[in-house]
Amino acid sequence: MKVNELLILELEDLALGGKGLAHHDGRVVFVDRGLPGDRVQARVTRVKPRFAEARAGEIEPRAPHRIAAACRHVAICGGCRFQDLDYPSQLALKERQTREALRHLGGIADPPVHAIVGAPAQFHYRNKMEFTFHPEPDGAPRLGLHERGTYDGVFALEHCFIATELTVRCVRATQEFARAHRWRAYHPVRHEGVVRFLTVRHLQSTGQAAVHLIAASDAIPSLDAWADLVMEQDPCVRTVTLGLNRGRANVAFAEEERALKGDGLLVERLAGLEFEVRANAFLQTNSRQAERLYAAALDAAEIGSGDTVLDLYCGTGTLTLMAARRGLEAVGVESAPDAVACAERNAARNGVKNARFVEGESRRVLREWAQRRREGGPRPDVVIVDPPRAGLHPRVVQRVAELHASRVVYVSCNPATLARDLRGFTGLGYAVDAVMPFDMFPHTPHIECVARLSRVGATSSGDRAGVI
Image (cartoon, rainbow, N blue to C red):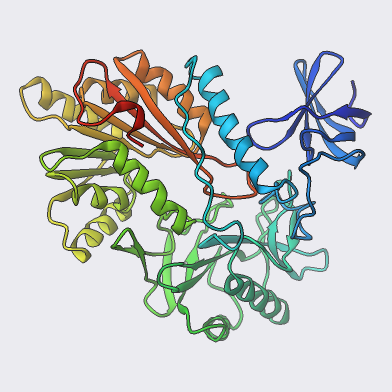
């Protein structure tokens, strides 16, 4: 098998991450834009000893569950690549992938996976979208989304079916303004140019919106006029901000931020609580489904009125405050100082007095809790973890287990690292009671899960098989 070779492949399955899976001459081939049941003519793009990668060309016959995609960008966009797979099949696929990850990577012979929770809406569900500037050959700025499988390829956005209509209007208005005023788009390879990213938040519960421009400097022609233009798109737009990222890393994060219009602040409502949202703050990007996810996590935790809850990777305190309403005390742990300060403001905003927040790395904070426990001090009744995609460091798993909390609730955005970490917990005295997958992002390969673990031998007030 060689790069650029054409193969005729029968696609058998979809791998985690969304690529079709086939076999050819004893080697696994991952096929971009292929679905199970497709017979494709695929061109090889990469060859390794144990696998190869290819891109689908002509498809005949097509998979029985393949449908016409709503968006014309689906062939090149790196975002919602499953629009051409009917939604019931998407859900069945994600539920099965969760079960297989737990079986093969987690060593759980019969994974206790519940039925997947489908999203309330299949389209226009994202409350935040990030768009990238890139220079055209003539120097004019292009604003859009990344092309699938490329580092620096960007296509101009015409529409987007997972963003809100207001988000798309703000992008179009910015694109026209940037071209008219000859803004210089940043080039990620040459490290030249100024404007880098445009982020739009449009919150579902409050309807408030914010537009955030990220640039390498503030040398942007007619910046105030652009901010006025964006504010005119809709009364929902409450604030426009400029963030500066002067580094070489081309990421949509600002080291400095200032408000051009408004105060840079939005408010979102989740589960009866209000949360402050600023440009760099993390917030689940599907608010309606996030409420279901958080409700499942809290139900799995079975928090009693006398319980102490330790919430690791708490961000701006969303789950911590929700847990505090059910228990005696909730302690949130977060390494980002800005997030901790925001979490404290959120607690004050909601009048929650039995929540406190600790700034620090989870490993250090857990070491302190374990030391206090060995000295006869209190331990948490429940530990909640909501780590990034990389999952938990093995030392974090070990130190959580050392606390001997009767229940651990793991909120995951990556079934593979969830499975790995659950294997670690089961070797340290915990049993996996239940795992519930959630489709937080329809038409994408992403899967969120809530997993409940209980300490072997510990008593619990609920039926372990049905707590979620």
